[in-house]
Image 1 (cartoon, helix red, strand yellow):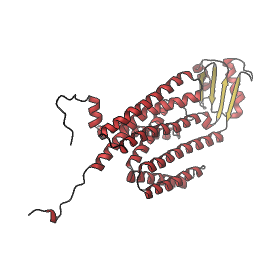
Image 2 (cartoon, one colour; image 1 turned 60 degrees about the vertical axis):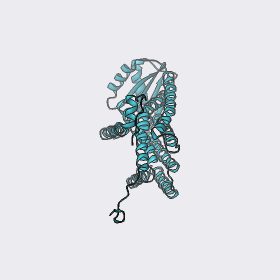
Image 3 (cartoon, helix red, strand yellow; image 1 turned 90 degrees about the horizontal axis):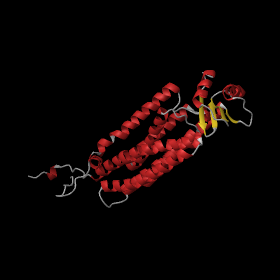
Image 4 (spheres, helix red, strand yellow; image 1 turned 135 degrees about the vertical axis):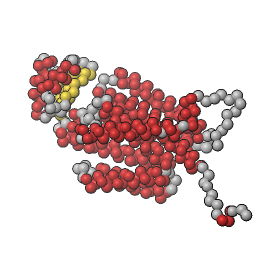
Length: 357
């Protein structure tokens, strides 16, 4: 039963009324974002064959760091005309020009000669080069992507152990998670049977989360949504991910779980106040944490020149903004829905012995 408003009591603001009373309707926002993100990533896979655009350090090629500034756009267009079948990117970092090209490493000298026609003669002191073979780049991608998946399922196992109550269920989830992680580690060759078994185990694992610990499922769903929606936005922005980008997604899992566990702990473990008051209490702490992190990263992003660190910080900023939606609308809404259903009195069926004469 809804609480009646006392005489003279100040009427709550519009946003508070919506967040307090219409939280189920608000769940449309994060779920719609997730569906759109899955659609974008699916389109990316169908058109390019990859989940995202890979940089040279993941797909192989040559990276040149030239100790001369240049017109990056003009040089990039010039090189793309010379290498129409290759992916060429040119960026300026301070007083240096960085050229990334997915060409055969044996063609490095030819690439340098082509660049010299625009920038003038280059000696060995004027540039440094990094060569990444295609097989090595693919190996890096598989290892970093596997690390992301392993971190995600380890996170799910720990969250389930913390929030679930049955020891048998905890042990079952731990065993399934360890088997799944072992399959991911061993499947370096991309074996189809192992991949199918891994997918089946992952689906079974999510079923266990939903059946035995809805709060755990809410935390895991929020972290999953953070990764998927952030990846879709990165694709739309045209960011080419390297090993630094994968590291950013690993960091994002940690940030996401941090705020989600804060919310779940305050709502489930504390008994003081209404559900809404516990959610808003956790929100004050969580938003303060997120705001300070965003400000610190934004300041660092404007000062640091390293391209890899800039990519990490850009992805983390996007992910933290998405996490605000997934934590305080999606996770909070699912928690409130779960607690209200759990506390709702069960209907007692009236048998013949209960019928009054």
